[in-house]
Amino acid sequence: MSETRQPIVYIISAPSGSGKSTLVNELLKLVPDLDFSISYTTRDRRGSEQNGKEYNFVSREQFEEMIRADEFLEHATVFGKHYYGTAKRFLREAAAKGRDLLLDIDVQGAAQIKQKLPDAVSIFVLPPDRKTLEWRLRKRSEDAEDVIQRRLVAASREIENYDKYDYVLINDKLEESVEGLQAIVRSVRLRRSGRALPGEEQRIVSLADGYRLANVRTRVLPILASFGAPSPSARV
Ligand code: ADP
Ligand code: 5GP
Image (cartoon, rainbow, N blue to C red; front, side, top):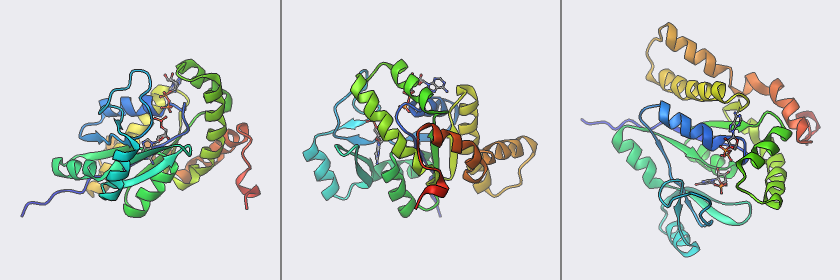
């Protein structure tokens, strides 16, 4: 009997400017058998983006037709404006090819996926602090000043969701972050393979464990404070 292995689904979320796209691009170069789910969106193309590469760009009518046809694994309205969604077909195609799947989606999408696929692995990327995030948004020089300000306000809200994720990666030094992200992806594969792990593989698992939510909480508190977010004890 032929058996298709269920893909491991990795979800990555982050406030805009944290370095998520940079990290995802590096990860996809380094980790074999990992597909990227190309989301559908109704927003306009930006800069050098190409249809079918970063996103599948569609009209509202096309997107709503896909909703009616039940083609989405999850979909959401992001920034209260545009539709974004993950098509079910990416999961089917990854399963057929025996590959894993990486989703770059927002907090609402991540919650929907976790409900449907509880074994999905979620990773939240944080900037080292607010000032660095602002600097990175400016350095990218993709957005006008008012857009940068809106992204910073949105970031303050988004980062409060970090504790709904399995892993939290503080993207300070790029090389370390790429190594950390790679370790998370590889360690989940190793653990789910169910076999005994020799030395080098144990090292990868230990490195990844350092990014587990329970092990980063104290490092996250000053980052939240830099955004003026309430501390967890102050929340209702
Ligand atoms: P996002 O996808 O989260 O919006 P980007 O990947 O576009 O963010 O990164 C925003 C800017 O920050 C880019 O100019 C990128 O080169 C830079 N950047 C990303 N990670 C780092 C890092 N660890 N250190 C310094 N600059 C970084
Ligand atoms: P941007 O427009 O800057 O590329 O992305 C805006 C936000 O939408 C980011 O947080 C990104 O992760 C999120 N996003 C991209 N694709 C999807 C998707 O398919 N579903 C959901 N829920 N969010 C998405």
